Picture (cartoon, rainbow, N blue to C red):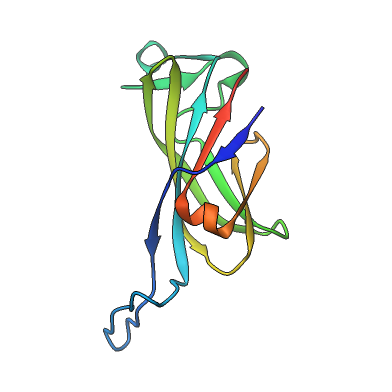
Length: 139
């Protein structure tokens, strides 16, 4: 079962490159980067035993979950608005934590969906997407 909660986010964009005018604090950036984590609570092993260094990787039915796995963002209508990858892993506290980022996601789409590998889409509001996405996979 997958759940969505709030983690962290990095905001990019805004400003006018043609005139070298910086964005103001009140301006809404045209794009943002969704940053989040996927926590595997079972079905994982130490990455060194599978040839990856360091961290963790999914095993058995979760073998598609590893550093480099695709992460996709969709808008509320199902249109792909960004693609990213799992970019780091950490074996900690009885779980496998995998960090991901999806750069240049356009703002103003209302609801967004985030999908890691082929594990199903989780729907979040734009505000939640801007704050970050924390997903859990496992029993």
